[in-house]
Length: 83
Image (cartoon, rainbow, N blue to C red; front, side):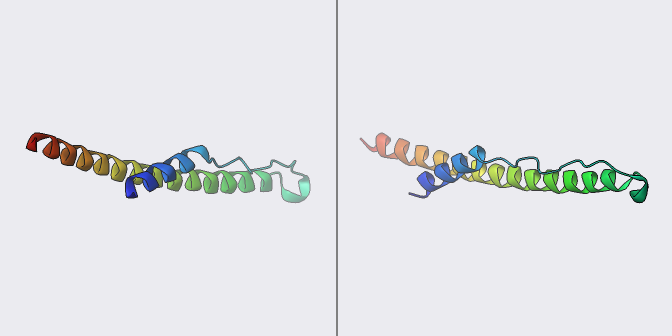
């Protein structure tokens, strides 16, 4: 049952993606022509952080799912060998 849940969670995570939300706006002399670059850099940094965390979660789910599959294969092989 846990394997099915992990597979569903992995599929949901891989289907969802972070959309770029960093909107560029023109600078003016009031902002000394640097405010937009700073905002853009911070926004892209946050987006990269979110994507990295998502990939870390996906990797953990994949490792756990692979472990569960190997465990299931060994169990099935042992049952088959008994016959």
